[in-house]
Length: 300
Image (cartoon, rainbow, N blue to C red):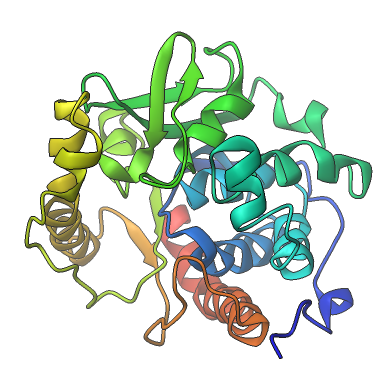
């Protein structure tokens, strides 16, 4: 029988991050439930007073970054390790109700009654937060910033909406889906914004690359949105090029990368609670193992 909840959820860290602001930008990769790794990394950073002035996230990275900017330690990990098998959250029920396989309203809105989201801290004007989305009409990447769009929660939902199994979301009059369809790791945005200190959090080990054959499924499903379909079909190749560039930038000392120290076998819709919890703690411990090197990089 599938375990429905992580039995040691009460051992996850909690509390609120300090008011210390760390100069620089943290870039968060997506990966659906592989985002538990990112949440472990971010919790470890917050517990060590590393709270970046700027955060940009794609898909699951946007969800993780949303809570990181609010300083809510352990919050998103607790949610997913408790509600992963709730039929209202993942599966046929939300798809029949809202045409999406994952009902993000549960973690972005409803869960606030269980564990309040620190809205005031999130909207601190001294800190930036950007959710990466893909506009379906053009297939281009759109960067929605919390103080420059009408509803940042809708932008986060759009960023994390999975193609094929989620409906498009209207954000400021633009119909959007998964940011990973056009930009899986938004390090270039941070470079273009001229941040001198950039930290990239991966959800795959550094050697991982995706298969690049084009199957043309997207062109059939999204025939009314050919530009989006093209971006989606080519996204794996784009991702591999991003991985190569990240590796080069890291060797040059221009960015700092935290990535899984073990190969990740967790799937996008992983249901094994022990594997999800282990991935969270892998991220947490990988971050702790890199703390001193990270502090050295930030102080250079």
